[in-house]
Length: 119
Image (cartoon, rainbow, N blue to C red; front, side, top):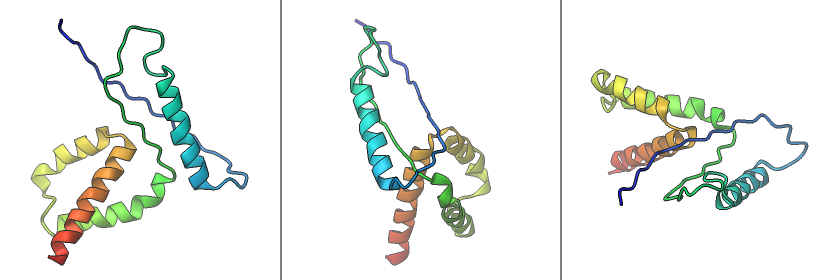
């Protein structure tokens, strides 16, 4: 039997009045609620669809990282690690990524750059 797969993306963005709630508590609640909803059929519903793999990310205040990401990317350009030839492809990839995936990639790249600088 041939397996036919597809990829779906669901992004929810919300602006919240915390009313004294701790951001970390809210983030933990959102992660738990999302995992419970996915386990309960959020993605597949009552269909015959089988969930093969999923990832769920919760990012709080990602725009607060803009200066840090900008500094990292500017340093990569200055060091020659991010050249004009590859810029179009990288911008397309970054633009099509979910925000949490982008932040994970930038974090990974910055740790590798830091390790290389220390070596």
